[in-house]
Image 1 (tube, rainbow, N blue to C red):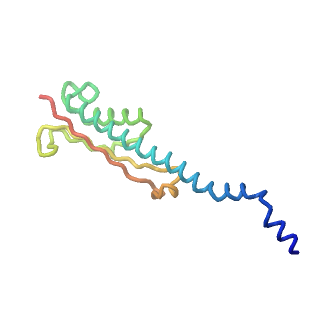
Image 2: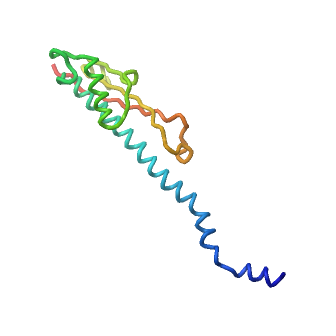
Image 3: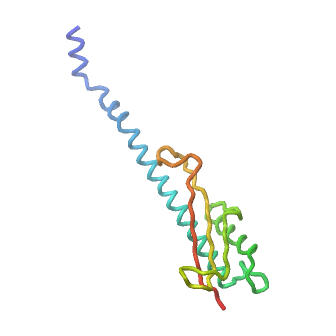
Length: 146
């Protein structure tokens, strides 16, 4: 029995597999966490770009956001939803808030757009995010053209 136990202690055949099994969960958590955090940042930046472009379109009364040369809330909402779709984001009209001729940072005469979406992680436990998603908000102001 002592000889068998001594041979088992000296055997190094499975140490690599055991070390790999111990390191693999941490390594996979790091990889998946990095990818998901990148997706979260990308979604937040895409949302900000959509809000900025929507506020500018509304303020300069571009053809996509105006009807007959004047501001149109429905056209602006459609424009913002189309921009979001280009970024592969889904923005229902309830998640878009428009304000024309409002104040921003204490100055008046601005167009303001606020958008909200929910980021849902593929691996919420690794990112320590709630399973039902994380709410992301973005807003932008642009001075109205006379």
